Length: 305
Ligand code: 3PG
Image 1: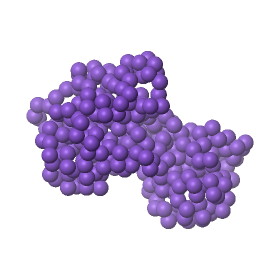
Image 2: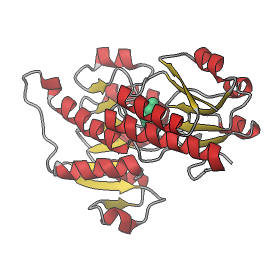
Image 3: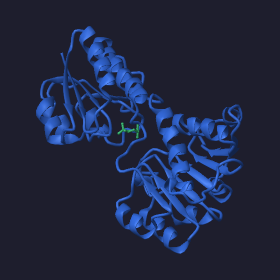
Image 4: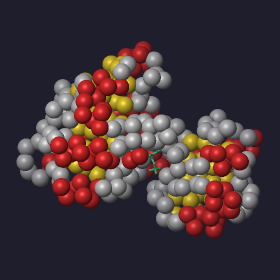
């Protein structure tokens, strides 16, 4: 059968090699569409039984064009790019590969923090993370890795996540916070790790941002949709002490960079999961899951019903 890997942001070559080996060892054919558009994906999907993507949009148009498709695996965590209702309507199983790229995203979070706090290494004095407070908004795989690395820097780490037991946080040296407002009120640094869902869209709003203490730094390596961009612009304008770091830059990034150059940091392209290790972990997991689904209906990480 044909398995299509369609990624606008290509996997590292070593990961592609591994994916190809897994696919071919199972007797399937790999078709690679890298740096392509949705039209390129649609042109290649007609006879594919499996599809592997990253943040690439998989919507009704794609599902309508896919005549043989049985499984889509999002090589990564967030699946807000995939229309799950359309997948279900077309009888397609959608899975993600939870945790496989989490360390890469977490390392970038701390890296971006140091970059901004050291004034982009421009020769002026910056500040340190040792002894500072970090609040983690959602303690999933990425949040847990951020906590581990931040504790290595000597930060005091707390987290809000109604789905995670106190003991699980405490076992990792993280203080559980039961009220979201307290997370924002009591931490100089807050790092966002919530998925983009209808409930979380624009949920990091003026109310929460205004609660943050003096010298506040908000870090978003999750999705741009979760922050209310108007509130963000207002906070940067109203508070000379407020800083914002994002791996998923807002729509008004250029304007913010021009106005508040020393208080914002944005990666030019989403880079969190862009390491050889994360590509190998997520890419191979995706390939194995596609192959297993085509063999015997494996659906352990299915996200649509
Ligand atoms: C994820 O949800 O796994 C991350 O945001 C990484 O996304 P990417 O594969 O598009 O880099």
